[in-house]
Amino acid sequence: MDSQDLDALAEKAADLILESRKLVVFTGAGISTESGIPDFRSPGGIWDRFDPDDFTIDKFLNNPESRRKQWHILKEGLLTDKALPNPAHDAIAELYRLDKLDCVITQNIDNLHQKAGVPGDRVFELHGNMQWAICLECGRRYPLDEIKPRLDRGEEIPDCEECRGMLKPDIVMFGEQLPVKVLEEASRRAMASDLCIVIGSTLVVYPAALMPIYAVESGAKLVIVNLSSTPMDHQAAVLIRAKAGEAMSKIAQKVKEKVGR
Image (cartoon, rainbow, N blue to C red; front, side, top):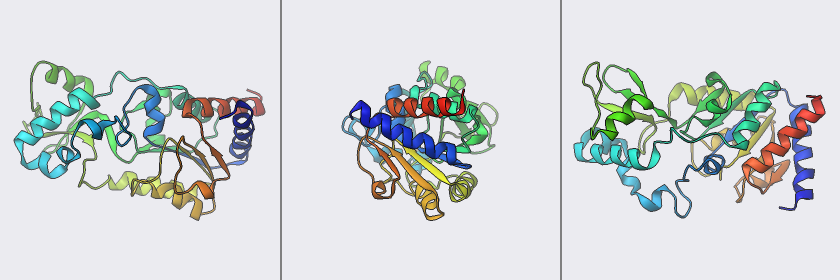
């Protein structure tokens, strides 16, 4: 995208943010690829390297060999505790510090919004958080940095140290329902918003992709920052075809300038 075009579009987006009283940011995998986290569906992504059928909840619960394979795949490919926020995450956190952000609704499981500085109670993770594992028997949650050393030492299927129950990565697997309370609150906030900014999502994965739809149907304006097209492009007040970090940094900077910070 031409820098002048991006500058003009960022200016429009910044004006919408300043006019907004309830800004909801919706993020997908495209924001985190700039932090080195591989996308799932793009060429060369996770599903080019692994079989999605190995990530079903049914296989995880009922087949020890599949469970062992899933933990190995997660250890090798998806344990992203060392990934750092990129300029797009930082820009969203800056909007929070400027008191211009109601919440983030994300499809991502990487914890990067929290690392960037958005409080955990303002981040609604529709697909869970890879930084945690949960015991399916007693409900105890373990941070990733307690589980990964066990995997590195050769423990193939970690269990709960409290009750020896089955541990599961605290993410939503295929065939598993989204967390009900998170989905309900995210939906409520989307419907109450007056501006929704979509960043790095193709808006084809449901029910997550319903969030921007709820926002627009409730009267919110829409900004889309994504390199490829989405089904909602025609509804966007501002459509930016650029990398998330580049676009959001420019938008956040313009907001800061306009509020004199």
